Amino acid sequence: MKDDARSPKATLKEHLKTAVLTLSMKPGADLDEATLSDEFSLSRTPLREVFRQLAGEGYLELRENRGARVSEMSYTTLRDFFLAAPMVYGAILRLAALNATAALIDDLKGAQQTFEAALRSGSGADRALANNRFHEITGDMADNTYLLPSFKRLLIDHARIGMTFYRPKDQVVADNLSVASAHHDAIIAAIEASDEAAAGQLAIDHWNLSRDQIELFVTPAGLDLPLGTVAHKTPA
Amino acid sequence: MKDDARSPKATLKEHLKTAVLTLSMKPGADLDEATLSDEFSLSRTPLREVFRQLAGEGYLELRENRGARVSEMSYTTLRDFFLAAPMVYGAILRLAALNATAALIDDLKGAQQTFEAALRSGSGADRALANNRFHEITGDMADNTYLLPSFKRLLIDHARIGMTFYRPKDQVVADNLSVASAHHDAIIAAIEASDEAAAGQLAIDHWNLSRDQIELFVTPAGLDLPLGTVAHKTPA
DNA sequence: AAAATACAACTTGTATACATAAATATTTCG
DNA sequence: CGAAATATTTATGTATACAAGTTGTATTTT
Image 1 (cartoon, rainbow over the protein chains, first blue to last red):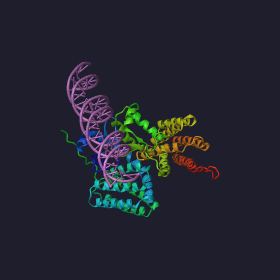
Image 2: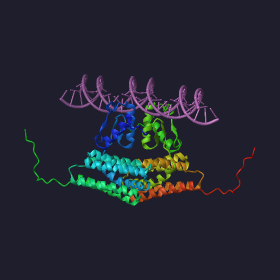
Image 3: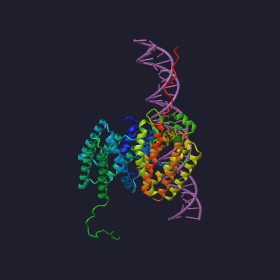
Image 4: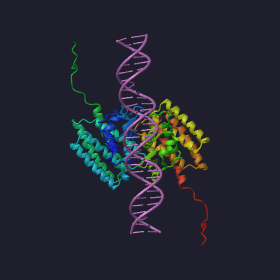
């Protein structure tokens, strides 16, 4: 299924993937066949095939006689995610260090430049997409049929988690992002040097950073307000 | 997509999965839409949707304008497989030991009984399917969205590798199978006791057994025949 | 005789019309 | 009024017809 990038089908697929990753379509949101069919000038038959394919890749969920919706994120998601991610990503980066080709290393450097550009001047969505692209390439480098399916699902929710727990005004968050960018550079170096052990360790470090950021978000420092300031509704 | 088990669509899906797992459809084999459409009294539209879904799960591969074929197994398959399998299966069994419900433990025991019955009197395909079912249940127990996709792909090729490297006449193979069955019993015990460490170790042991059996198959003892027995073509 | 090209048969992709199931609004009756 | 039953509407599932692309074969050309 290597779609021509210009076909309406490929356009739709790209659009939906981006929308899911950037949360512009929220988890659980319903997809209407008729509407999308109109918007992308595509009949329902190929549209539904795209749904099924994206469901297979983990972007959507299909329910019998009830259409498609964006994959849910529940409160067990984060736990499942951080259980699986270090292991899978560690394996991916070790294999990437062993198997990377010169061409893919170039791609990875390009993706990192795009990521840095997005850090400086892009939107949150731009940053999430660029980061996603960077990691996808490491997956290509690892080139293991059996690890990729889980890795790609992790990347989907990695992007969505990043979008969820990002607060642009927060200095700590900004600092974390530049650390993440430094990680990317170190990952490139380890892969280029075929340094399997370093690559594996960087995977762990990278996820620890993500987890720290989420902890900051979930358990913030309490607001410093005296009790008793809650507004009461005036009786009619 | 919880299909009614009686719907022609579900029947087709079941049939194709089984055929792929048991090698009754060989890796790389082409699937003809018209023929299958006839055989399962289903029009091409839903049939193609099933193709796409099975492609998402790793049973089939779709190629633009060239229909579907059964997923290939290449030279690198075995290597990729044994790289990923111990890690993923180890994680699955550890999580299964932590999360298994009583209902699923019952299911697992039932699957193991079916497997033993197949060992005694079933065909190679029966055995592969029963074994596949057993491991699928451990995946359900682990209940981690991110690990399951890779695990399920591993199970597909585990079944196919088992079918490929099985020789019914060989005593060593038969012995290995009864060891495998003993592993299953030990796995059930570890899960029931919530013994995470034991479960993880059993995963390793189980794959080592598989790998040994394949080595036996790939590098057999040479045939003991003298040189010089090659027949020459008589000149005309 | 070998290569190139044009044609024909077949396969896949898409659109549309129809069938069926779910959701919603309406009516009926307690 | 309110709850249940029923009609209406809307959305999903399937079949079929047609369009577009691919493959194999026959013919032509060198």
